[in-house]
Length: 431
Ligand code: F6P
Ligand code: MG
Image 1 (tube, helix red, strand yellow):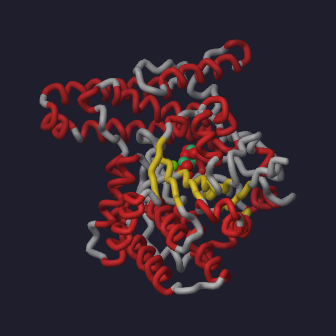
Image 2 (cartoon, helix red, strand yellow; image 1 turned 180 degrees about the vertical axis):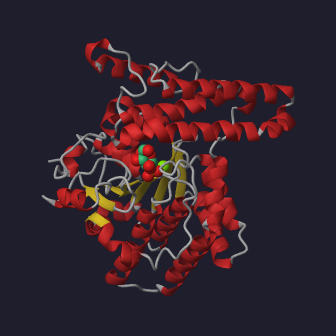
């Protein structure tokens, strides 16, 4: 049985059941905030979601969205595209459509349940889990913040080698931070409790492709280029999960600007709750506020600094509806031309996580030796790098025989979250 099939059969209904339970547990809060209207909204949302779970479990055709959001038309058009691709005109159903599509679709339908019931339209069904992992990872967060502040104060006039060593560590911490997503564990605890820096050496052998030195060279080339010297390099970080992973990304963003490797870092999040643990604007702001408010001196110093970066515009937060559409990234130039044009202005784009990797590569059944550049199928807004721990059945850019060897030793190597890649692509210069 494929991982995709098991996800749709087991993991997605479990997630839906948890969402229903969360909404139900918040009934009193809805009543306090909105009176009877809140309770009615709760009832309607639960009945909508129970029906959705039944549609999924009995392999019913997927339905067009019935809300009136900014992205509704795009979703319904995409559904039609899936339909047009079906052989013998069968309807697109939960088990008979591409996994990437149907999984994204479920999260959008959950949001439909919330949006169709305006009194609770702002409710984040995944907030509790995200908050919990943040609090459960406090020790690791304090450790990481302390390490960052110590590195920054100790580096008066660092040579390139020292800078590179630190860069590598912060990049790898952000990479392994991606182990902490909540959708693979269907919402179970996935918090980080041990020192993230100390574990790096033992994790090195699990990085299957490590293009970190190319990422470094790209940043170094920018330092030397006259054009970027004037305006400074811009790094775009396409975020994945809240909780510990977000902290690792903020720490990386802090390091990049504090040592002058970047002049500007743009964080990109999701515009509604997505894949259980993904970062929304509210999560982003909440995390910075919590970090600032910590009793731990170094942690709160980080929070204060991050707030300052945002205020000064050195950091900024962005969301675009494309990140919560089911489209592969090679569709971006046609389906979200404004976002593609925006990303073309970047000097380096870091894509966090597994879902972004699936969208970069179109989630195809590629041979493992297919070059990353080919799997991107023309998606080339700027130099880009995927920082991803493997949780789905797609992996490209391996040496011949490597994938086969892994399969023979550990059949679930692509989905057990033990392995990772740092995979870089640089578009060729225009002549
Ligand atoms: O369930 C599908 C999936 O894409 C997995 O591959 C992964 O567990 C999860 O969803 C998302 O992971 P990430 O947060 O790293 O994108
Ligand atoms: Mg995620």
